[in-house]
Amino acid sequence: MNEIQYLAEEINNCRKCSLGCERTNTVPGEGPYSASIVFIGEAPGHNEDLQGKPFVGAAGRLLDGLLSQVGFERQDVFITNILKCRPPNNRDPLPAEIKACTPFLEKQLKKIQPNIIVTLGRFSLSYFFPTLQIGKVRGKLLKWNNQNIYPVYHPAAALRNTKFYDLLKNDFQQMVQFLEEKPVEESPITDNPESIQLSFFDD
Ligand code: SF4
Image (cartoon, rainbow, N blue to C red; front, top):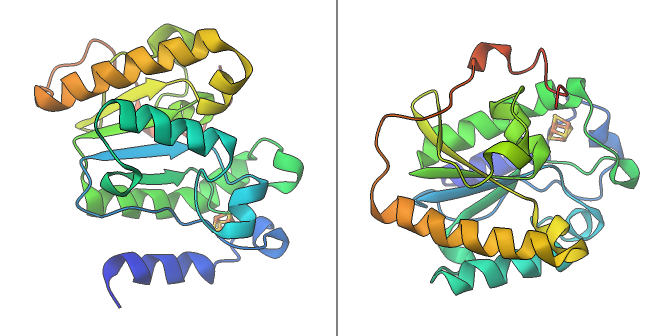
């Protein structure tokens, strides 16, 4: 069993929060541990819960399209969520669920060590930067614990409004430029990582 399979198995056996009793499947994440980009969404939805794979519904197809426009395929990147099990009726994740589940995400990021972590939507941005608002920082390269965080809107937002699709398209193009330029240490915006769980829902 390799490291990816071992961690997936650990997640599959997890009952650390009540979502473990309600899920159909866990959704640990998908992609190579050699990926230079990690995408992080909020939590699995209905289709993801049924298939055990991240971003497989309409938002996932839109994400695939955005990737392909900048020369990437899904198998080139690692895609996961803050929570590995679906909250009932797609409700927002609860602070206790986030606290219980994010050690898995931290293990994944430690193993992968990507060049860029792309947060998809408000929740995953809040995990790293509790006080920042996505509308103000999307498309900007941020620094967190010596890692490059690049917030963009969630693909589901682009399904509802073409304005968000245009912004996402632009941000994906810029993401590739950042990758090619090998992002530097400085960042225009920082936040206190120690405060993550305390003020998760601030924005
Ligand atoms: S959401 Fe995370 S912590 Fe909760 S049961 Fe699923 S894997 Fe475990």
